[in-house]
Length: 121
Image (tube, rainbow, N blue to C red):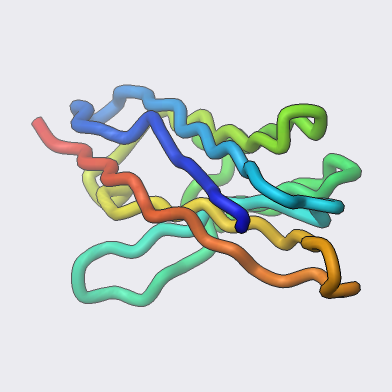
């Protein structure tokens, strides 16, 4: 059983910062990539940023220059540093991991339970 546990969400004023963390645990053979998605009310879930095991990163245009994704392969953990937050960043943020578990021989997507980020004055 694999678990992705997120932390770090909350309420912040516009222009403020938050740091999200997501730790993957359980029977994991290998992680190909980890990332963050978000879903605002009435909108589809969208990619925010992701990072491969080799350190290659990818960002949504809306967060480039404000958010930074990083990972710790030894801890199976990914972080999202969010600066200069805007009200439009308000959403539930979900951790995603593309990983391999025993007896599967392929990478499958796993999701965290989500953490709320609210940007409001």
